Amino acid sequence: MHCPFCANVDTRVIDSRVVEDGATVRRRRECEVCSKRFSSYERAELRLPMVIKKDGSRQSFDVEKLRHGMQKALEKRPVSAEAVSSALHGILSEVQGLGESEISASKVGDYMMNALQKLDAVAYVRFASVYREFKDIDDFLAAVKSAMDTEGVKQRGK
Image (cartoon, rainbow, N blue to C red; front, side, top):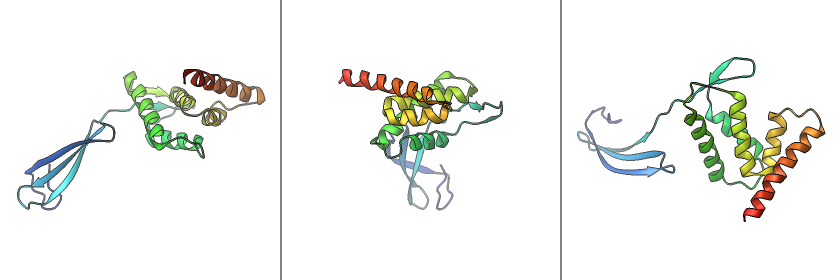
């Protein structure tokens, strides 16, 4: 790795630590010429599929778009940032596990719905109301019933 201070190519690793729940390795390095120290981060690069939208257009998979949608649904709900991060990681794992080069937006939405249903019933209904484009109160009531059924399973499992 090049030294960011003197651009020398000879640096040595002083220390390595696993960070971000094992997803990243942080390495402390020292330049063999100027003796300055710096950190580098290493993580696996996995290709995410292209997302096929409802209108047939394709766009790159955007993790930040998922995060934003999840945060919007969870706004003012008692769910920790760690739980959100874990849910997003789970969605990414599922998508990458498919091994496909393309995935439909509806499939990504379904993964999001499942994750939210496990995290928070209110967030699930909020997201469902937009994602499923509820046309009437019956659609809304069906989503609430589904959320209540899931909450009942959680309560019995405690």
